[in-house]
Length: 314
Image 1 (cartoon, helix red, strand yellow):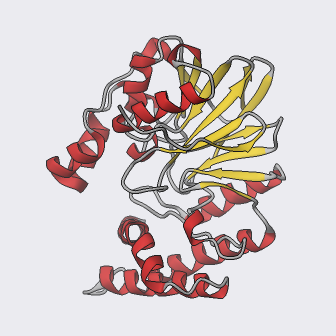
Image 2: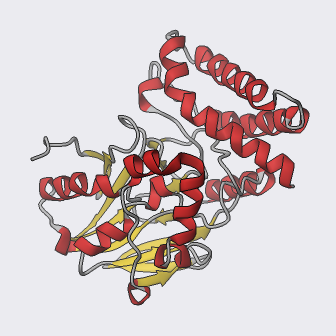
């Protein structure tokens, strides 16, 4: 039996847990409670399902009370557990982006892509078996789709830039935007004196900086009180945070343009990007460079791969 996990309330009717994917407090799963029902936003991997059940029990609910399962996009740290969750949550419908729904119904291309990146051993360790979802239980959410969740209005907005199969979800009642990877990455254990630092996610293979900046600006048009990041948890999207994010997108894009064709492109881009983020963290007061570099190593590695792919295929 797993240990009781921490369920953190971030707004009225919104709780967040650590999915357990990859490392501690790396990927979040959100629970949006309405009356005696719940919508789950993001799924982690198959191995996150026991944590979801644990959290549901803590908030007085069960798998049978889940109405919707909503991955923001089909990257497997966000949607890898969707099939297993749908098996457990027999009353739930999956809400998916029109470009992503088919890959959750038939995940063969998702699996092949992840196997090419991770290899079979690591793929199995991270994700287990990716389970297809019955098409009859899938709802496609086009841009501006409105879901009436028992009187709670959720608006789905198309937000390409990180991926073309990405949407964000606006919870009108709490002025909260669930942003997946569109509004970047910001870890709570890197906060310093109440200050957060944010960086973009430029992972392969659909990074588009201009589209990403447009999507971020569209999010800000809703004037959100909080952005609920998958990596990790909710933050207030202040002007300072917005500037950090936009400026860093420009910086890493320029790195790719300058170095993607160089012999040692990956190491050059990685080191310059890491140094830029470490400098930003230092400016908010974080002094533990060793911890910060370890914390950001996977993000910077994946960002580097995505930037090089973008330049070589644009």
